[in-house]
Length: 147
Image (cartoon, rainbow, N blue to C red):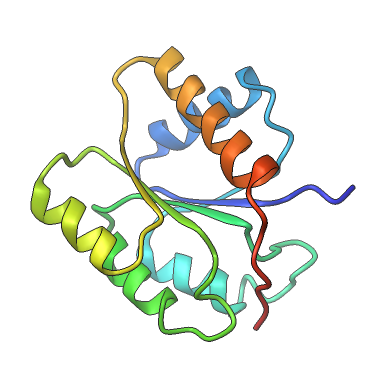
C-alpha cells in the first residue's frame, strides 16, 4: 500500500520539529514534507524547482497550512490552490495560532476543509494529528489530483 504524503507549511522550525515528533508519537506512517513559507508551498505544489521531482516531492493527500507565513500568507496559498484545476481538491487543514473570527471565516471562504488552532500541549497536538490521520487519510475517500 502506498503511503499518503502530507505537506506541512510552517515557518516556525520549532513547530515543524514538534509536529514531526507528534507524528512519531501518534505512529502516523504517512510521510511528512515541510516547507517554510507560502512561496515554497506554491513551488512545491506546482512542481517547480527544486520540487520538480515528484518521486522525491510527491503531491500531498493533505495539506496542513499555517496562516501567518512569510512571503505569502496561508490565505494567499489557499486562494492560489483553489484556482488550480488539478490541485484544488487537495484537502487543506488550517493549523494556526489565530482564533480571530476574521481569519477563521476567511479560511473557510477560501475553501479550507478545516480550521484548527494549534494546541499548547504536546499531547493535545498528538491527539489532533491522530484524529486528522484517521479522518483524512484512513476514512476519507481521496479525490483525484494531478497537475
